[in-house]
Amino acid sequence: MGLTTPLMKRLARTIVAGMFVAAPGALFVGAAHAANYNPTETSRRNAGTPNSSIVVKNKSGTVIEYGNQYITYSAPSPKLDGLGEALFMENCASCHGTQADGVPANGTTGAYPDLVGLGPATIDFWVVSGRMPSANPRAIEASRRLPRLTPNQALAIAAWVNSLAPSIPLVPTPHLANANVSDGAALFALNCASCHTIEGDGDALASSTFSPSLRNIPAFQVVEAIRTGPANMPRFTGNLSDQQVLDVTKYVTTEIQHPNNPGGFGLGGLGPVAEGFVGLLLGVGVLVLVCYWIGERS
Ligand code: HEC
Ligand code: HEC
Image (cartoon, rainbow, N blue to C red):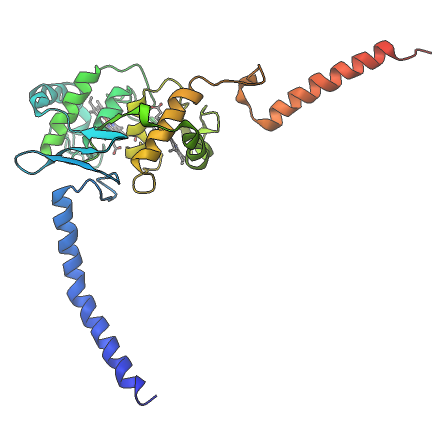
């Protein structure tokens, strides 16, 4: 005891002192990383992607492309900035403000989401999926509509917003030829089916929100949704590698969008209980009829 007590005291003092030294140090390290936009790192605002083997920077050191053989992510060309700014002022500034900071002309802060630093994939996704410009800003959940802007205009707006504060995730290009669809099916069942259902048809969630159907969504938008987590959907970053995201995307854009029903009838993919009930009704029903037919009548 006599020996351990002074030792413990010294240890405790070292730990306390260490905390004082380390805390500002950690803050400093965090800030330094945020400024570098390390694409292998994740944080709530700038969701990065793991396993980048390609990292391309421009002259001023901003990452403009990263990824690997499964998915490459690239920044929209800065040549689109001018067009993007004009389109933003026309279609978005009335709500999100001329600085894209969510403060409209009447100066109400916090009225609309601040778009600065969200990353080009987020801006692109909301515009290219027709969610924005918003048809009904009071809606609980903005849903997919026929896009009002073209894919190139969406990229231009993403380019301009990104020029205000360069950030990630960048716009993804999935290389579907390198995907494994059966791994994708397992990953989908684990990570997505709880909300979107195993058939990808979507379902109601809490508080009048819903998870949409995943049919007819282009592959790059599936990746954008997974990497950016629109609204109530969780953002999948470090927990799914690019290879896994590609596998899920392949599954969503093949099996879910073109289901193959080995039994012949899909029955709307209602699930085993409902489908079993149909089987029971048909099977037992036919048996009863047969019994009537061959049975004796008295
Ligand atoms: C009429 C008002 C209005 C207009 C115009 C509008 N937005 Fe929005 N925007 C909203 C509202 C409200 C939300 C929140 C919707 C939600 O969470 O479902 C939103 C959400 C977003 C988000 C998601 C933000 C986040 O944190 O996930 C993005 C990105 C976005 N808007 C971009 C745009 C762009 C780009 C334009 C122009 C093409 C635009 N918006 C036009 C009202 C508007
Ligand atoms: C906690 C529930 C939840 C989970 C888990 C979830 N999602 Fe979602 N997902 C949502 C909601 C809610 C939306 C709609 C967001 C909005 O538009 O406001 C959505 C939107 C999407 C969209 C865009 C659909 C469209 O109409 O534009 C895609 C694609 C998507 N999810 C794919 C996935 C995949 C793939 C996974 C698994 C890796 C997954 N989601 C996991 C709830 C979820």
